[in-house]
Image 1 (cartoon, rainbow, N blue to C red):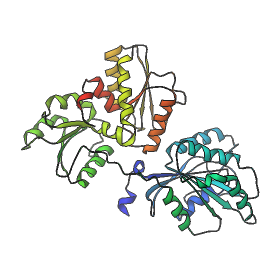
Image 2 (cartoon, rainbow, N blue to C red):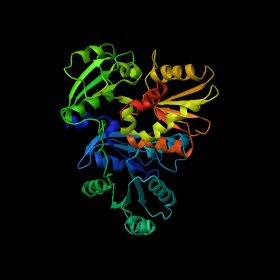
Image 3 (tube, helix red, strand yellow):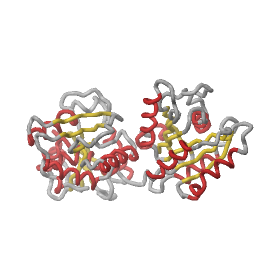
Image 4 (tube, helix red, strand yellow):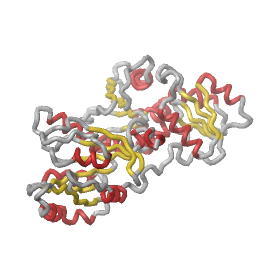
Length: 404
């Protein structure tokens, strides 16, 4: 259990719970968690922000439940609450849409939400919450769902969230909706085999907190050990010393993208090279799309506008890769007049059409569904998109010489 509780949220299955105010969403969260995770009240608008709860749900494994604000929130903060709900929609690997069987007949909002998730190809559990005295209303909701219930990515469960303690049917329905390929990919993909020696060139600058490794490195080390590789770690300044002490060249070198060129110039010719950011470009996003986006760097000019999107919300420090190093590389090549905007955390512009390029970080703090939602938004806006490692490899002239 300790291992599951320590799983980073970005690697957990994200289950979003959506519906109207007072439809039973928060009660449902409490049923799944077995505790008072969300505040339950008859007062509309009790849930003001997304409530996140990390837990294990058998047989799904490590999950994050997301309890969202009501769809028709008309309170003063309603608009901001609905923005948060849209954010949860982008993060959801599975969506639960709550249909309140309380005597009402209009379910246009719920059906629109169901259709929105189907368009995103996100599995949906339609939870018909039967309120006391309205048992017959469930049949009417079933009729409105119609042929949608025959969709393999749509399940329907009928229950009274205010009374039931039985979670089994709910869990089984969620397990049937779990994406077949969820968590099936390796960070290192097909780049390594059992017994390979892998040298990791680790970031040890001001951005790496003292006495701590950064999440991508920790996850990569754990995966390589699970895949029965031999892992050697060195800082950039000790990289060549580490190589000299090995009897043979490592099969793969994974480096911090910031020293991509230096490592490339000093590595053994037989050793393949990649970076943590490039690995996460494939693991969290769409690597081929990022590579295509990097090619557009050559068409930028001093008058171009670039958006840099980082997932972390850390206070910017000296030599920050997204705020200083990549902008410096771009301006050195295209001129100091280039406009470069930076957003962090979950902030991301609704309007992207004014940008000539988006450069996304590795995305280790987000789940893949959320990163892919950003990629989809960029595609729809016809704005090229790449990521830190791929962009640096292109800017330093080695993109076609690395492995991925």
